[in-house]
Image (tube, rainbow, N blue to C red):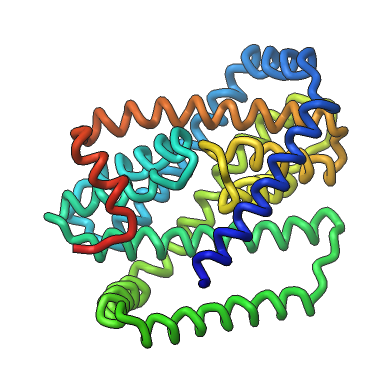
Length: 314
């Protein structure tokens, strides 16, 4: 029941964002503006290299977080390869299949121990969502959008209530033993002495990722601060939970265009920046896929297994 409800919400919100993107594309798309912004970016190699560097640092930090959380004896290249595989397949497939491949890389290295692989990725994604939420709320306050305290309390209460319902459901279901085993693994990861460090490094990684939208937007005539960039990044990446197309195409552009418009950009400029920023991330993801294959080659048979294994344990 809960799974069907979450799918319904995802599809409804996702379709709404796709429709918004289509409307923006039909009414606000300017080929000349996209071309102009792209040319400016290509003729400013320092800005472009800073974007590549900052984006790369964000993933290196996430790989380090994963290594600290799981097992430092496993080579760092395994973790960064898993993250790059995830990035590549998430931009190639309409669903989050990249996360399954990421789990599979670690599970393969640990001789099929899917429990740790699954729970570590889930925990790190929860930390990511936490920071995206923080940056979204703080950023909104920074630009003058009031977030009512009652809303935050209600949201927190709703999340806690949902968590309790899920726990109660799993305890009464046939999956009780599986749930208990998974919970113990998750608990062990959370009480790790490195977990506070992971939380801090995760925060820094998202600050580093903000350089992408900041780099593109800084080439315009508008005043755009790094706080603005963090808020826009948090909303745009967070919207990925509603993605219906590979890489969150359409949902990403819709949310980024809206958030850029809120900080002073016109709709044409906002859409152009969103398209260029996302194009940069697509190109980066394909390059990351090649790097991942070089660092940790996977056979196609194994890739198929990882994609169909999603969420199961052995």
